[in-house]
Length: 315
Ligand SMILES: Cc1cc2nc3c(=O)[nH]c(=O)nc-3n(C[C@H](O)[C@H](O)[C@H](O)COP(=O)(O)OP(=O)(O)OC[C@H]3O[C@@H](n4cnc5c(N)ncnc54)[C@H](O)[C@@H]3O)c2cc1C
Ligand code: SF4
Image (cartoon, rainbow, N blue to C red; front, top):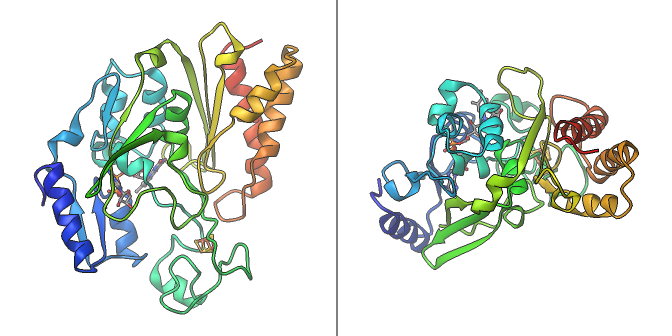
């Protein structure tokens, strides 16, 4: 188990040089259940548990190994992050689950998140085809795209707070706005290269002047993955500061700046709230691979967006 970032990079570099597959493991609350179901397990895992650099938590620096429960309990945190983190799973899971693991959460699909026997009985699917070259069961006859859904809660809140994500690999360090981190592919999921990890997220002190909301649709309110989630922020004065982002709808969390910018050009009070909520609804394309029907999830995107804008006090 590596004791610092340099050692982690060295171990990863060795596996890569030897042509061996591996996964990073943080809290293990998603990876271990997936391994138990034989969903693309690797022969090696590298634990991030002993790397103290990844545990740092301040108002502007959130280490990848910070536990979700710590986000909810730290009074210095932005209330939007505490709300989004507090909506994830249960207290017990949140005490193990990490920020990095949540951002890098595997995409989900009801044809995939099943036991091996169940998947074998339907002859597999493209994301875990067991060498059979099975097709995607959601969008068929294309054979090279997985449209599994990104169902993690933190990303839209962080996008609305203008967060930057920081990565490290044996080749060096890089950083980018969080919304640029994700890739519209249910298997690749994000821009991480082999051997690369998320080290931390940074926020500007200015983000703390933003007011935020997070609304989530899930099957069970007490603990469940988002079937749709909408985060929104603004500075309480100027519509130009408004940001909206969604999760639980497509293979990536989405930044809805395009819809916001179009709406605020000719803002007309409550009518514009309705029109903006409708244009966010129209911009998302859920598919039939989670608990609720795509048409219902899409309708709820409009409801959650309108609810968020009203809660922010936007008129
Ligand atoms: C019953 C139950 C309910 C849940 N409900 C929710 C929910 O409502 N909302 C939600 O968002 N999630 C939910 N989860 C999923 C999960 O618990 C959380 O998303 C959690 O934050 C994942 O973090 P982890 O540290 O356990 O990740 P892990 O399981 O350790 O890892 C997850 C993935 O991220 C990768 N990874 C981890 N850390 C890094 C890093 N620093 N750099 C690069 N890759 C990394 C791993 O390789 C793996 O692919 C639920 C899980 C369970 C079991
Ligand atoms: S979207 Fe298609 S390829 Fe991806 S997990 Fe679902 S059925 Fe499999």
